[in-house]
Length: 60
Image (cartoon, rainbow, N blue to C red):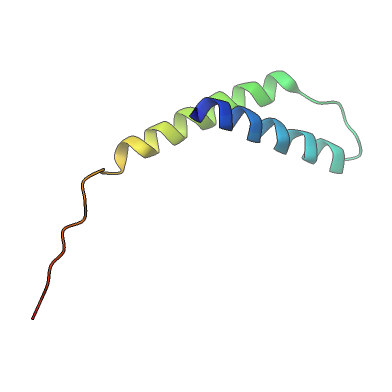
């Protein structure tokens, strides 16, 4: 699912930025490569965040 969302979001950003830049041509291959790199980056970040619950320390 991470790849699907990164693919959609990077292509959307690519479309918007190219439209704002004067209607230049879309670089779909570049956007696809960037979406793969972004997905890998997000997966690596999610692997470094622990899934353990946060312990409650009640100080009285």
